[in-house]
Image (tube, rainbow, N blue to C red):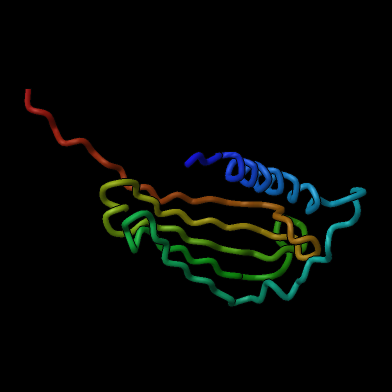
Length: 132
């Protein structure tokens, strides 16, 4: 019994072609105006909390994002977003310790960031003294 590998190869190539062509149709044409930004997406006091899983670790990090305020920041109207990212459990101890606060200011008309601050609360890791 002789089998040909042509049909699977052809269908795979066809799928790859479609996957590479479809993103071209999603691009904005004519340099037109972007879609209107919804200001209702940012309500002061809204808080999103995420528990992050990584590989075989069901609890690798904790991320919290909050809409803090709306007003004049850095001389322009902006929405202040604050995020806290912290690794937990084995990831924090054995792989990489992250404990960082981010503050981003978003233009309420366009939804684009106009300023960002980052505060990393890093713990120093000391190597154990070597016996000589």
